[in-house]
Length: 355
Image 1 (cartoon, rainbow, N blue to C red):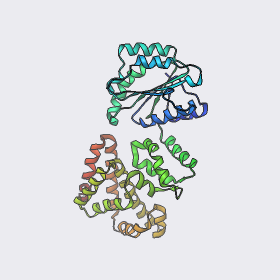
Image 2: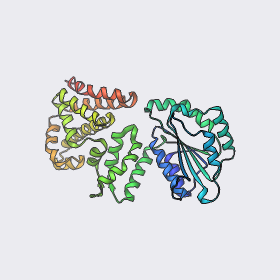
Image 3: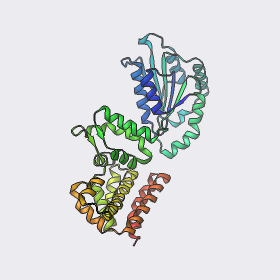
Image 4: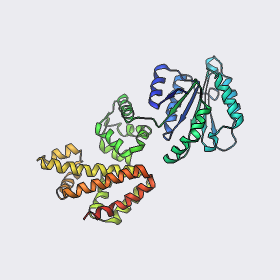
């Protein structure tokens, strides 16, 4: 079965304007599947109607069977008005396994698929990243075997490189005449960690925020993507410095309730303490307060307060805090989101023990 990645397939579609007879889309980053389907629709080049664009859902309720769907796929003809894009969305894990009749019908269709139909099998499940990995090894592997053919293109939506995502962000913003700083892209990557690809889903939000200034910097990323603005992260770190566990835990609770992910908070803390470390280095090399503010992109309204904190922050302590937060970051990426929440709650107490 020919395989592709999300970005490679999108580039191919834009260049060739032609889609394969059968597409299999799967991966934890399933939202990218909708981008693929939209690109297929653009290549199709015809107005969407109930006849030529159809979507079926296998979600545990009563639904059309594979045999009927494949009969419809075979009904397309070379007439433009009779060509079709059919999407089969697998929303129930149990529906990934094909029954005997479905296996027979699919095997027969793959022997000679209708060239006037694009059939898309789209796996869309509500699972955690860890559960998806297990599913991928078992049921998805078997589904791929059943759909194996020279006519099938399989797209693993999780096979995206960091470089491809960065280039996509730059290209998206450039098309809209929006300048996005290198620091902003690095900040996105830092706070989103394993979910870096999901920024593609949020680009319209960044675009809307930049409508008036046509620029996106680190501050815009902090507020729009992480949900943490300069004020709230200062409150969080200030509570740590005061060793006020009650206030720190209240802020964390508020952020969690409002849907801010632990990885975002951890990334923001890493950036914050790294700025302190860098500022101490610049001070030793006699940089002025204004120059330090420019280098670290610190907003003017907190710069003096930030510099005062830096001056009173012992060298040994900043190194120890960075070691703690880097370990926390590693654990969050290897132990899951719930473990990261607990570790974040314990972080203030670990800092206190550094004495």
